[in-house]
Length: 506
Image (cartoon, one colour):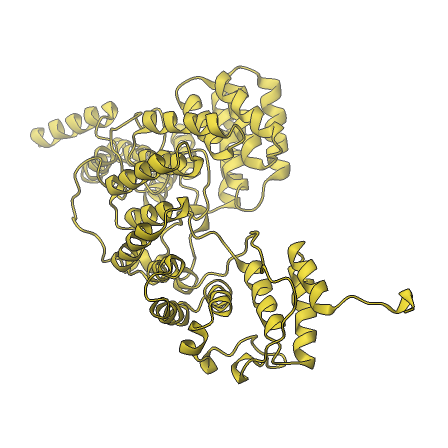
């Protein structure tokens, strides 16, 4: 009888166990040791590739922000001047709530209350980051359904270089691997997610689609993902539509709608979202997608209705709770918004943003003691990216209670944390104007206009300051920009009439 102290688990079995427990780094290490002793072990090679892929896997369904490459080299626009309500790239203007009630972000969109994956907070800083961005996320996928281990020898392209890359892509025989369904799918995900080598992944997907006689929906879906990543949105649209003819899942509708959002065709996106709801009734991801489209079009009332539908299906959906709370806050119902934010706090959302929103709701609900406590927690939890917004909101509260000195210091601290904070520049300019420092105030207003051209407040303040110091031409240009951002602003219209009377008198 064997000594139980000398028994040991098979290394590959241990690696598979670690993979199932999502301990990917340890799994990859064991597979690397196996490959050092037997470089042609396909099972270890397959499992190591899956482990490396899972460490960098991200769900491609989520809508991401346009990178710098897309912003500066975008040739997918169909019409330069789109009709109202048919474009996501044109600010919604007067649709929904007024800008005097609900402010806009720096991109010209109403504040949603939720920072989604890939929104402007994740905007790439360089063109290279926009094209090839390292990603990290978690997912759960089965490894294989094989009941036993079958060691099969591979080829020289599977050899791992010591201290080098796991797979030498230049040595891969794409056509050969396309004939092996199990290996080809794992290899594709490794190339696509871990290496971000979309060209090689596209070649593999095309060869595998041809090998399956164009009947495998999974490979058509991967072709569409490759085309989308390369910016070939029309080709991606064709592949996703072809995939829907073979097999329908929620992800396929989301991918297709993602393409239409990139093509700035929100109406087509809404149509396919609703077709998806016909097959997958009350699916929260589809309902959330519809709500986001309506929110981008400025149809805030309709967006809130869909977010309410999301909460009926999933009462713990953070995005829906945050967006509904924001809508109640800007609809002059801070007490109701406070209930939603408290719900988020009970769900375990503890960050500077939630405490800042709680502080503002408490302030407008006249719960001043709780407001101060919430802002103290927000400052303690704030990161370098959020500290400026926290100090700006504290300064806004200080203005409300009449403490101009404290507000001035808070806006200065906001600009210290983020020198590109347009709102802080605007409010700091107002305080400088109250101190009768016209030149400093005008400089602050101009900085705010430069950083956030969609905001009407700094343009109007700049026009007013220029008119007071006698620079009528600059005032006229600024008030026109203010009316372009907010055509219904009464004070801007009145200032424009006054300037026109001055010009007539001259």
